[in-house]
Image (cartoon, rainbow, N blue to C red; front, side, top):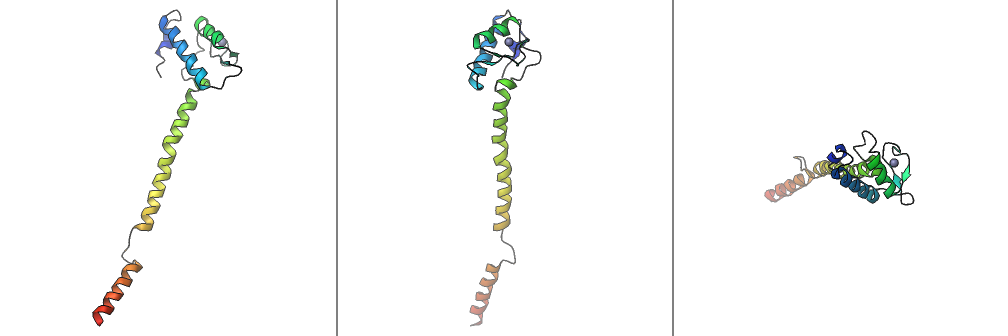
Length: 127
Ligand SMILES: [Zn+2]
C-alpha cells in the first residue's frame, strides 16, 4: 500500500485524502469498539479509542505517531499474515505427499508381480 502521503505536510490535500483512505481501511478491517478504533495519532498512540470523526481530526491536527508505517493495529499485518499461511502450507504438505506417492508407485527390479509373470512365461515355455 502506498503511504508516501504520510510524509506530506498535514495541510496538503494529499495528506488529507490519505487520512481518509487510512480511516476507510481501518474501519473496514478492524473490529471496532462501539464504532471506534484505536487512534494512531501522536497523542493517542494506539492507546485510545476514537470515533471516525475524532480520529480524522487528530490525524490532521496532530499527525500520525512516529514510525507507524505498517498499520498493524488497523488490520494491515493481519491481512498479510493470513495471506502468507495460505501461500506456504499447502506447498509444503504437497511436496511431502508427492515424495510418498513416488516411494509407493515407483516399480523396482525385484517387483513380485514381474517375478510371477516370468514364472508363468517359464512354465509355458516348458510345455
Ligand atoms: Zn488520537
